Amino acid sequence: MSGKDAVILFGHGARDPEWARPLQRTREQLLSLSPGLQVELAFLELMRPTLAEAIDDVIARGASRVVVVPMFIAQGGHVKSDVPVLITAARARHPACEVRLALPVGEDDSVIAAMAAYAGRCLD
Image (cartoon, rainbow, N blue to C red):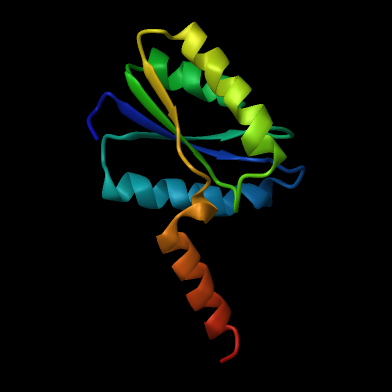
């Protein structure tokens, strides 16, 4: 990825601000792996910034390619219906930029393997 790229880690949101800590830790790790990459958090509800705000912000700071990574275990109602509407609206606001929606993090084979390994370690 280049300096014109941005990743938005997109979560549901919660009333308790501590809920976002794993997403913040993921952001910190990604930034350590890719210095100079724009990495932001965004939330569907109850927390800020919203997805629209985060997309607008990274594009205002020079991103020409934005990848939204749903930090969801699977494609439920929000990821199947709500998020595509938000992505379509962002593309309409920023037609010169590429705004892409990745699969939910929980559907990636390496994440599934990590979850299985963790579950196995819980027996120790």
